[in-house]
Amino acid sequence: MVGLWLSSFAVAADDLDKRHELDALLAKANAANLGSSGSPAFHLRLQLHAEHITARPIDGTYDEVWSAPDAWRRETAFPEFKQLETGDQDGRWVDRSLDFRPHPVYLVARLLDSLMAPVAPADEKVLKLHLEKKEGMKLQCADLGTGPAHHTLCFDERGLLFSSEYASFQAEYHDYQKFGEAMFPRKLSVYQNRERVLEINVAELSTPSEKLTQFPRRAASALQLTPCERWEAGLPVKKVAPQYPEEARRNHLQGTVLLYALVSADGTVQKVRLLQGAGATLDQAAAEAVAHWVYAPTDCGGKRSLAVEIEVQVNFALSY
Image (spheres, rainbow, N blue to C red):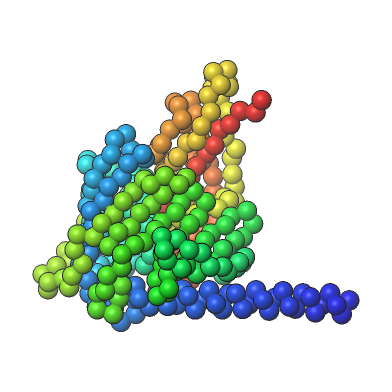
């Protein structure tokens, strides 16, 4: 019994050491980010290129003016789509030309969020700390996980975030430039299933003029959303299993349906939109099921729950 207790204590101490080491890496990376504590105002313009996730390759732009945590504006534009996102003392607001967020826009936001605020949730265990070598650089990497979900963060020798990987999503950050005391990569990429689907290049990173930091009033049509994103929705507290359509079975149809969902403050799904389909019958079956799911209210740093946008994958596969 004593030996077992000592063994358990050693494992717990090792876990604590790994968590402290990872926390130190995260603190160093966050301290170098734009918008960190004491950071000066900035104007960031990006050129966006998406492919393989749209009907054809498309180019877009991203324009952010940040003055303070409660005073900023982000504009994202792709062909036939425009979005204005603002932050003020009342929270985070979104006004867009469509009633949902297209997948490339989701990826842009996730890519930047993973860079500006890399985190390791307290409920994720640090599975392993290890060294890797990629593109001639030595990287310090951390594998984290809870249940079947795994997440990997890698930092370069300066302590800057090199990559963030979760399931099929992988973000990479290259060619950092200095801005005041902060650092920001000139090139950013998103990979899905090891295929590059989004490429971003910095067009401008500068101090904004006084005119740019005089933010207009938000639009009356703007939707208030939670100030923190919940990228991975996890398992809903109530889940209705999609029914495999008989017609699809007979025709041996299978595939993955990607859906946009707006989850209200109480956890119910308020809106579902198709992002990528696998055929009309499978798309409809997936949307009908997800519309009845219920999620736990979003925990956002102790602040009151608000609506949150997520993406949901529904896989249809036939067994032989």
